[in-house]
Length: 384
Image 1 (cartoon, rainbow, N blue to C red):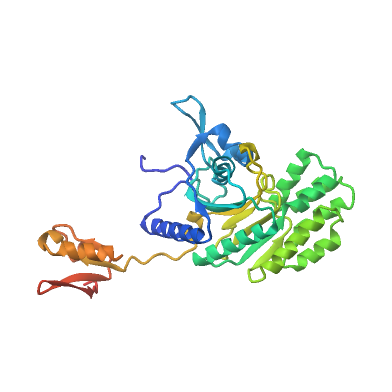
Image 2: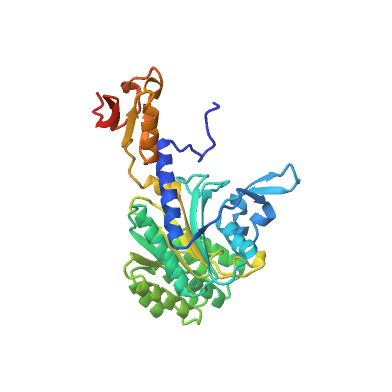
């Protein structure tokens, strides 16, 4: 059947496409007002460039092909964030703070989940060149403002700090293999697996790892963490950073999940995820990834977020196909072309019937153009 598409790949039909495009335009306009400059990285890059630095963990998600011009292996981008880091570090090469945003299709060799598309439309914003917590505060507040503008109901923004888990692993002298295994168990919320993996660890680290999945909820979680986690020097500033976020972002629906290690090998500071009551998984994720540009020649502080506009669009109500004007075929009325052009220039949607079409064959509109003594006026269309 030639009309079948690959699994987890789908067309965007008119209503969905209209929602996605509306979100894209609105989001980029909002980001521009916050001084985030749009960049458009290429869909294809040489694989060794695409999977360098922050992109190295994307190998299994990246489609590969051979460039018939150079003979080298190309990759289709699976994430635009590493490309933005490359642009900041290697092409722009600015001093001080740089704010970038982007929106475009990415391609995944495997779907992220059973309900995910393999061709997400990734929208993101990144802030480079500022190591202070103020940058994290800015991007979290920006994400919330963006979702509000999209009319998405945000139930909570979960915040964590990967430095807590990393400090525990270092203090417990866990090797890299065991650390990766334990991180995977935390990501899967596999409590029995975590217990078995930590069984041979010395105290207080075994109890600390078992306590992390319980440290989820409001700001009281941070007080509990101070009581039960060992006094490792790296843990104290991480928790203080989370406390300050709670104070600075008191008007946002923040919660805390100290066992959230999504992007653990990529992030190295504050991480966050936004959730909506209408969607099972996070609708947007972000966090700090300092040093991402090092492989491109400049190690820069970095933080940001991204989301899939296809997923966000599914949270929005269906559009009503109305607010358009139905016009007779202009070939039959010479002066009508000028009126149609005038209406379109003013922002109206005008559907012109083709020769031989009747009103009943036209698309759904709520008004139509009626001739009255050589003049054209707009009347309500009752659908008769």
